[in-house]
Length: 133
Image (cartoon, rainbow, N blue to C red; front, top):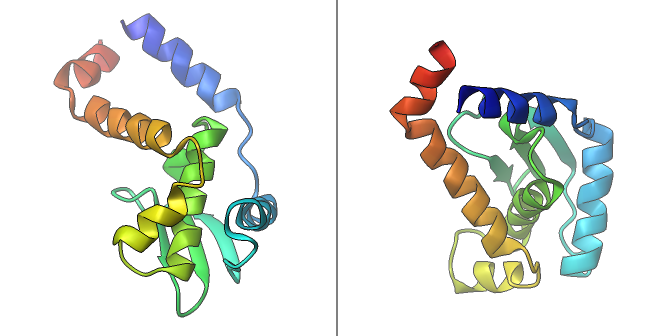
């Protein structure tokens, strides 16, 4: 199990995460594709101080921050988190209107499942024990 986890970690670390400028450009493309360009963030950037959230948005400022923990995850997962935060520029909260916006992204449920799996795996004691051996 430890060898498999080490291989996965090495594979993920080889994936190049986009820089902040590329992330902002990508967010603009996603907004155009899924929200008719209506979600227009002023800034989109990676941050290292979000260890319990995947992303956050301050609609009044138009700023979006993505956790550095997303780096190395599949692109569709990063896209989902970006779209989630872009949706908050249009609809505050997580009510029905918010989720209707995200229905446009075909991988929403898959990405949410992936992130739930990551959280669950982090809580498993045997993973921590295996890495320490």
